[in-house]
Amino acid sequence: MESYKNLLLANKAWVQEKLNLDREYFNDLAQDQRPEFLWIGCSDSRVPAEEVTGTKPGEIFVHRNVANLVVHTDLNMQSVLHYGIEVLKVKHIIVCGHYGCGGVRAAMSGQRFGIMDQWLRNIKDVYHAHRDEIRGAGDMDAQTNRLVELSVFEQVRNITKTAALQRAWAFNRRPAVHGWVFGLNDGLLKNLYRLDPDSPIEDIYRYDADSLR
Figure 1: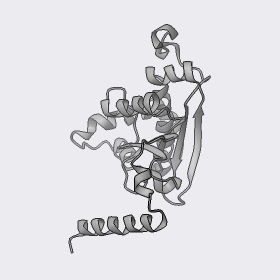
Figure 2: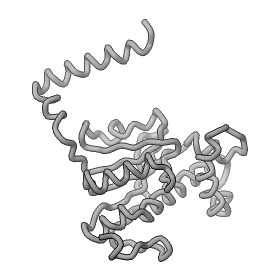
Figure 3: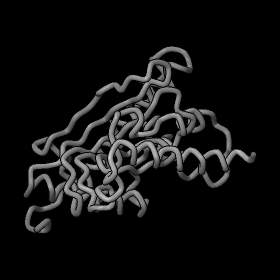
Figure 4: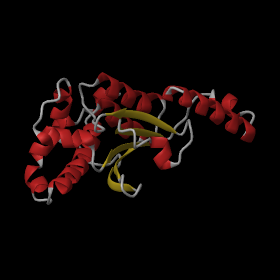
């Protein structure tokens, strides 16, 4: 049997399992989603948001890309962020990286990867801003993992530079923005950073309150 057919069979088994527990499961699922969390994670197949957090369908709004980046020119990312904040009115935004990230390693390698080079440039910029700290972290694995952590922090800060986030902070006092890192070796989520609605924003990135109305 071709491997993709196993996915279809597994889906049927999953559906039956849910219906055995609750005949209304999919009727309820079809109603409007009201997630409390927006998850911005890495595309790495080993870090599924719902699996590692123990959440159910409908509880977490998910966006994933290579190395969990928040790039101001990425319309996909910015659309998800705007929708999560303005429409779903999430209470928490979580940027989650993971140790041993292949995207971060690629950015540090000096190799060319074609079209991905433009994307990895964002990680290289984080490295450049923190290069002394990263170089002092130890061996290459330690340096990679420190860059993972620092990149998560920079993505958290990138979220605060958006008008959607600043508007929600100014008028709704939400959401909190968190920076986490997942450990592939132990399965644990490490809570590294948190920015609340009263957190300072550098002047050059702060919008005037009147323009946010």
